[in-house]
Each structure stands twice: as C-alpha cells, then as structure tokens.
Length: 309
Length: 324
Image (cartoon, rainbow over the protein chains, first blue to last red):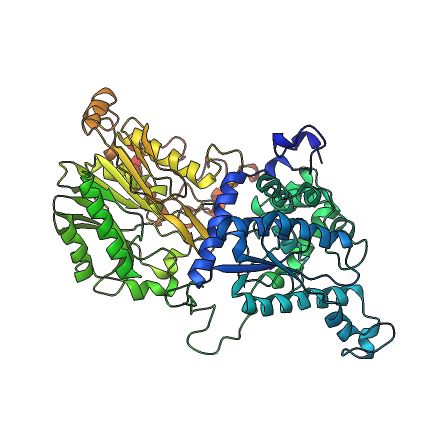
C-alpha cells in the first residue's frame, strides 16, 4: 500500500497519527454520504410506518456509525441500542458500546446471550440442547449460533420497542462473505451496506464516532483475541482497494495484477466473492405458477398500503 | 398516491402562479413516483384522463410540464411528459430512451416513444421536451433545436450515485448532468431547463440539483442537492437571439450532411450496404478463393481493409455513394 496515496480524513485530527489509512480512490464526500444515508433511514422508517429503530451495538465501528446515523435521522430518543455480549466477549466491546450510548443519549439494554448459546452447545461437559455433537463445536459453529441468537433477540426486541432493525454490515464483509447468513446480516434496511470498511472509517470520523472505536482493530469478537484482518490475511485498506478495482471499476485479473495486486490475493478474493454470492441474494423459489414472487411479481418493497399504519 | 400527487401538483401550480411564474416544470413521473415496477399499470392514465384534465384546468394563464405513466389505447405504457397550457393538455412527449442496464429496468415495464418534436407554447417560444435518459443521447437535443426549440426542458428522476470525493459537488451523477445540460445549451444556443426529483425510493436517493442554463451555457440557477423546493428563476428570452447572432452555431448546422451519413450508416447496419464498421467480413462481398488476399493482408477487423473491392472506410466521402 502506497501511503502517499492516503488522504488525511479530517484536518481537525491533526497533529497526531492518522486514525486510519484511507486509500485515495476510496475517499468519498462525507457530507453527501451522510445526507444520503440519513435521508435513506428516515424514508425507510416513514414508508414502513415506523418512527423507531433498534440495532445491535457491538462496540465496533460499523454499528457505532449506524447508531450515529439513526440518531441523526430520527432523534436519539427513537433509537434503542441492544448490547448482546457472550461470556467470552471482550470487556472493551461493552465499554465502547456504552460510550456510544452515553454520547448519543439513546435507550439501551444489555441482553447476555451466554445462557442461550450455552443452552444449545452445553458447557463444562454438561450437554446442551444440541447434544453430544455440539459439546466440542468448532469456533465457526459457535460464531454462527451467536450471530443468530443476536438476530433472534433483536427481532424480538423490535416488537417490544416498536421499531425496525437497522443493519450494520459493510460492503467489504458482505462481498467476501464474512457474515453469518440470517445472523448479523439480517435487518429491515442497511444504510452502510454500500460503504467499504475504509469508507466506514472515513464517515465515522466525520460524524464524530469516538476515536477509540475508530482506531481499534476490527473484530467479530466471536472468540478472544480474534481480529478480522488476522483471520482474513489482508488489511482492510488492501482488501478494499482490491474489491473497489475488481468490482466497482470492473478491472480484469490481468489488469489487477498489472496494477500491483499480488496474483494470489486476486485469486483468493475472487473466490471469496463468488463463493459467498448466495449470502447476498434472496433464496431462489422454484418457478411453478404464472406469477412468482421475485421473478415476475415485482413490486417495490414499500408500496401504497404497505405501511404499518 | 396518485390523488395526493395530483393535489400537490395543483397546490404548487397555485403557488407558482401567485409568485408570477409563466412556466412550471415538475420532475419525471412526479405524479406517480419512479420505482413502480408492476405498479405502473395501476397508476397509468390516458392522456385524456379526467384527473389529468383536472390538473390541466389549473393552468389558466400558465404553462406546466408534468410527468406521468401514460396508457395508450393499445395498452402500451409510456413514461410521458405533458405540456399543460391554458387549461388544456397541449402536447405529450413519450420517453424515447428507456435505460435497462445498471440499476435501471425501464424497458421491462414500459414501451419506448417514437416521436420527437418541438412544440409551440403560449410563452411565445418553442419548447423541446425530453425525459431523463432522452438527454443521454445527443440526437435528442440536436433534433429538438433543429425543430425550432428555443428552450430545452428535461424532466428527470435521476438516482444519485458515485460519491467519489474528487467531484466538484461530491456526487458523480450531479456532475454528469451539469456537464450535459450546460453543453447542450451552449451547442444548441437554447435555454436548458433540468428538473430533477428529490427524495428516496427503496435503495435510491434522487438528488435534485435542478438547473436553468442560459443559451451561452452558463447556469443562471442551480437548486441545492437533496432539498425539495419551488424555485423561481427569471430568464431573459432575448438571450436566445443575442446568443444566436453572436454565435450562429445553429445556422451552421449541416442536417443534410448528417442525414446523408446517417442513411449510409443505417444501410450498412441493416445489411443493405457493405458494412465497413463491422468486424466480420461481408459475405456478399467475399472474394472468390482465387482472389484471396495475401496471408499478411487478412482483414483483422481493426485495420482498414485495403483489398477485395470493398470501399475503404477511411477514404470514403459523400461523393463515393454513387459507386456502391
């Protein structure tokens, strides 16, 4: 990564080290981005007939940014942040999430998902609902169940709160499939799903997400010490640049290699994107009748009569 | 939905009249919304629909351009823009170019119009009306100007995208439209009015940024991005004459040359003449085996063909036509 290309996110953070690395081609106009995302949130809720929203606040930058945007769109008093730690979650995650809640002044609650997760997998040799096959479950299985328990809690809380679930997944993780289907990717709408991680950081800095949250290494926090970048083997600026040129700018493999991206990285990322296509689409329905939803019965998601009230 | 939008249009017409406006322009599909899909048939109106006539009745002493889903007698659906004047539906333009690529899917739901002409208005000038994508094709503003338009009007529902920070206004779509409309105004020496929708539909955000551009290509009014509003702009219609006297581009247009070359290109594209633009050898003109070109002279589709009796596209001129 040529750091000469990096754009300082905001002069007000100088002097001192930049909070993050922003590849020049990924820099966006944060004023316009903020305007579009805030308007989008407002419109999604209004068209659905809801005044309130809620989200799972992890302590990481993605959900923090969405919390700030939702608070700006509808007012902090209309936002509920649900903190859903597991017993092995880092204490820093809860601290950072609490910092966002206190900065915004929004409602919050903590739902400890440990009994739900342990109740399935079992704990300390005691069998759970998942039986013997779950006692020594892999990190992958445990991580997926945790993500889906959080989804389940959020959708239950959405009834209690009377609001829609705001999505917090970014474009980078969606494209490489670093998400749990029907877990963290489940939502009613997602304002940041077309922003790469580097752009999430740029906008987060612009809207005033606490610096400690922007600076720390991104982690799914599904097991102690986990970081996205260690798991993926890429840094986000590298990965974001590659995805940007590959997908948004339609460069061929040969062109990407000629630009300086390592052949192995190009091949691996291409495979990740292709292999996760199913996670980004609605499951296919076997075509039988004359008019099939999603095929030849095509309506806007929000249409006259679709609002709750 | 349709009734609410009709009422909103009528209220804005009244407000515009009170503000002294002579021409009021509303955005593409302002009466129905843009992201319609299968709803299109449910909100469609014939051009003589009593609801549209009711809106037209609000235009005494006014000209207005409104846009709606038009259903033809044969039940084709069009994206149309109507000129309402002095209580009547004076003219209807049906969108000619329906983008069906990228985030657009218009051709799936609509039929394309097939008529392009300018229209005299009560304002004492001729108007050239197009809808959004129509103005991504140079032939449209050009034809309208040649047909006597002094003011080009484009009504759009342009979804904003491409947020790259390098753009002057932070939104690639806005930069593109500014460039297009200012260029068309300058090249046609017409006023150019761009009216774009504001708001959010599903995933897309319409970005506003409507503009009025003088025949010099200079923007005389630019609306803010993303803010809805009724904006009053004073235009000096005498600018058209002044600009055309000083910069007689329209006088110097060569429509006969354009037409002749278009006829040639059309003939080639439809197989009525040897196609020099094609990368495939023309089978009718294929040389007999005995006349095969030398191996180093095989047509590769990129370099001009020099042999085989087919005219060289680079040396062809209008005068060669008779030879074909």
